[in-house]
Length: 421
Image (cartoon, rainbow, N blue to C red):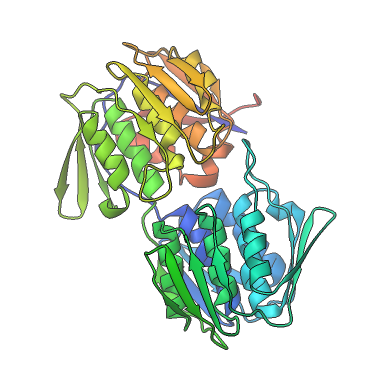
């Protein structure tokens, strides 16, 4: 097991490139189950969640090659429709195999998902969508068992916008007989890319980028190649690394159109940006951090996956800010650890009331989930003295060697093997 040792207080400078998006990769990979042949996903990040999905797909009979961020998936020898607990328990995105397996083979047995260290995140929306398409669903001994002779187009309305459920419904409906209408669909960039990939395979999806999707079922899909989008959450995390250390840094391989909510809030807090060719330059060298309230919401609102990182930034802001999470009401496991570094934060229901302090001081802290881990690293970069962040395996699920990117920007951070837990 590893930890990060961070000697804080250093200014950052220079440029790094943002990795491909983890969340979109985890949708694109199961989508290849819908065809037979060689599929290529370019700009795939080398993070543990990707390797977990590769292992899960291998269990189903998918062969793979993964080199230089190019993932090749061979789907002509799928011989199993069972996704076992040993793989699915590691991450919730594993449930993405449900829709394509059911659609192509008429059967799927998928373990109830895990991989979450905080709060209930039910999959009932996924299951209701499958039922609307004509699947018979049973839950037996911790497994979802779904079957259908042939899925049939239907009207699917999500009471709550859900990225995962929208993705699963899309993948299930593309081979269904007839027309499917999905209302209140998620419009996150990762879902839009999935829709584009399915269309490139031969699917007939209209309305991509809107909350109303129409899918005309087809008889067969065909392999294709797609380039993954940049990871907007990694980009946002690195931008806050520059802001919290009052630095000037630039990011390449970034799509600013996916970052409007984060960039708007950073500008509101006093941070300046410059777009130069294909790079985004953040300039916080002569800026004080102004307090700025944030309320998370579905895209294009402020992402819940940036809530913990924003809370870290606000610990050093001038004034008092309120950070409210409307997506996951109890996603605040990072708060007690930030308090160990000297942050002044009070939890009130699903909000963190953050009173900015003059400085943070290094301490030993413990990661509890992926984004909470990132918030602790950010706070450590700005803290006086040494901060040790334990349980960084959470970070490795979703950030590709983030310590190397921070080192390239001048941070004093190293990965150290430890027996501490």
